[in-house]
Image (cartoon, rainbow, N blue to C red; front, side, top):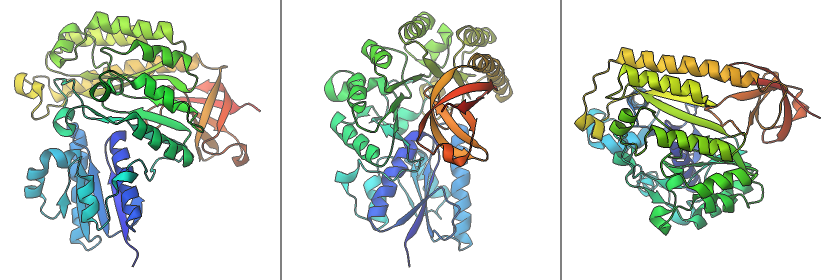
Length: 432
């Protein structure tokens, strides 16, 4: 019988990369690998879990229990669990869910490969089985984080920052380009920290420049940059290198000085404002995606109102919001009292998103009549679903273009004129 395995990925894009590496290793070992599949003929299931915040942990637990139930009903033979939740709570999970056949942490790739009767091939770690559409892929340049923000459990799960070598990343990017990837999305817990541990200096700029020289790669997008000590040379590289998208994902988390101090962000309001102004002065047409955390201990009503005013004033292109979740072992859990009610946290998050919704609508309406280069992601009904350089897949808005199926295909770059706008979508027509 054919060996068939279903790998279910939860959580962030960094987990996606981990799953893709594992899938390739298993495929080399003779497995037919499915990803996030409903195909019940896969008798073995691996759940790659997230353990970042409460909602993500709950989703991971629910997913595990779902497959454990399927195992009890004879629908699957083996259930394995890997990733962040397994790394952090392995002992508790082993006690609570003994039906799981094995738990593996974030660094246990060789162990789970061997458990599944495949041979771990370290020299092929730069190769992956893509779960994304073949024209874009994530490139994870480092693991872990050194910042120690009060609320964040990532250093407890993933450890200290460890950069990969430039050579290994270039090898991986060449492999991805050969698979048809045209857009690289560079990810890490903090992409701007890249190289400090390995080379004694930040080398994210040099890395991006090298990546931009790879044939086939047309867009390079930077995610998860930290606002403190942002390298000046990176600003200029983003400005001058046409392959680097004028897009920056940079979580600011807050703007109130006291909250930023309690969050241990290492930056205050003035430094944040100066930094945003510097970015916008140097990189014209820059789209900034950011996230904010509401309900952190110390966030008074006045501090929250200051955050809302800041969002109104600075009009970011993309905004996400999280509600504070007390995480075991973090500085905040040990030193602060979580004294803001869940209802109040939800209210504050809703206010932020209502404000951003109006900002997004106004910014989008200003784009009517403009022309943009887009990448075609997929065909959906009568529309081609596309993105500009200002939009990352899965998290940002899309450009919807009507047209016959012969007009374009996924991975094509086309010019589009915007004809109408909604809060989180643009509509346009292809230019001949």
